[in-house]
Length: 240
Image 1 (tube, one colour):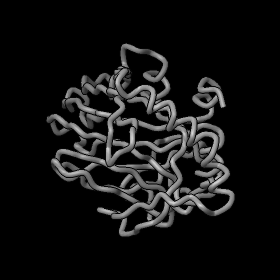
Image 2 (tube, rainbow, N blue to C red; image 1 turned 135 degrees about the horizontal axis):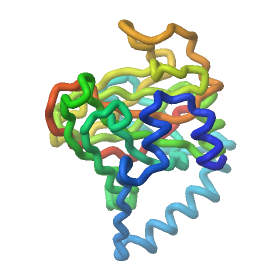
Image 3 (tube, helix red, strand yellow; image 1 turned 30 degrees about the vertical axis):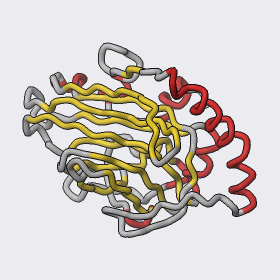
């Protein structure tokens, strides 16, 4: 699915539609480690060519071992994701965010990690920043029927919110859950779709139309309280 067509269907709040296409408002820096490149390409080819067969046969054996917030430990399928970031600039805010994509060797495997840092300001009363993962076509089909999703994160001890963005919600009141990114500790966060909820104090109330899922989105919860943030996210998976 082409990104341009996907963005047109997103129905996001104005800041997202305005900031996504403009590099000056969204920072995505790619660092390539040539020492890892051969191994990384090999693993990506293996995942692309073999994982679909394993999933279809029910033999995919990658297991999420712990769940720091969702209370579940389930098998998950790694998908294909395009990552990006956003801030409150369309609301005349000045919060900053940078996203650095970097391959790392973790437990003997080369994984792409997403290192996110920035600063929330109160220039806009409800200052915010966040990042998102847009699935490729195959992963999107899995997401639309998935029981849940999981990801690994090493954080700064602050609370964040993860949401499943759907095309029918146009005021950003997406279904999601808050979690704490434990400081200097890598943990697995997993949520089942039934655990997600809309914000209680704002937004139009709608049923969760999972078949209209577009992406998975993360956001700070400072609500304009000034401060910095820094997390590393990786291994985003869909739980079939």
